[in-house]
Length: 515
Figure (cartoon, rainbow, N blue to C red):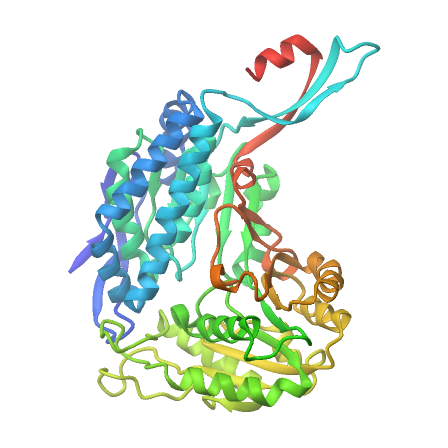
């Protein structure tokens, strides 16, 4: 039985105390164990601040970018091994595993290129120089400087590769050493990544804690940054942590998200925009078994197209084979954990009490190639409600699985924007329309409630990555319920780990500081 070790203070250590098991969510077979404690976290923080901070601080942006490029190559070199781990420990199909692993490599490569563009500078200018004196001699300049602290990354179970790397890329490029803690249940992929990455990075640049967080946050202090992805209940606990409050530790949160898809009144289902809408809804329901923070949970369609949309989704979902994800004929695997299964079933039951069935009932399924009674399986579920603004289970609770609810509206852009707003903040919502005036009215009202709006149309349909794909060049995060944080977005993601400082003085000195 493999006992996963943590990588702290430059060495691998298995820890002590009780043990937690990692299982295959298809068969429930035990894959590995993790110790629940026994690590010297105070020493790990000291090692990061001292050795890691010194080593990374001595490098230019370009040099740190080159490190990220090497990490991306390491992922490519171990791609098949990582895919196999994701299938076994995450319940991923091969396609889902590639989505996670390739997304991580693409993100690292994007920030490697950004590092090359930033070059040898140590400060990054923020805006143009400002005249603050009687003449141009006296100037002001905002700059970004690397923070002197530790980046603590707490990641979710659903994207053990991409989640780790999207945070890691931004922090390392900014020059901050990282302590990363993956979700225990699916830690095999993250553990293997750190095994690959550690020899390629300077000492102290990256540390790994597997198992419970324990007293991890008791060691944060001034200059540190915490980036968290997970449930809203844990996010609320983090906001109230005594050390975070006492030292005003920078905290970035990505929590629940009731993402929506809106079909514009001008779109026929047979059009390219209509086909894109149907494909996106069906894919987001089934990719990663609906366990994506960007998945479509709520669907709004013109009332006259409700029946046709429901029929089309039944047809598409009816062709999705659910079962053992290692099989070539299976397109959707199990949920990641037994707790996930319990939570999703409870969420479906809550929805079922206020909605009507369209497809899948309440998720009962007999998975292909799986022994009876084994695995954490639930089938795709589509529900419907006639009152989209007043359906509390739809607008107040995210079912983190292959579940969506379809509702009708009269085609009014303001109503569609209000539907987005009822989710109280989302990571991404999408609209499908070729009517630019309608889209403009919708975007103006819906944008305050979304971190990203995906604008589907006939002209871009052939190039669309879909709303569920997080791009390193665009911000990932959202207001309100979604946590209020921002990651990625090119340089914006790096700025989470930088400190903005206003410089005031001789304009020629300011110019020289920025090269």
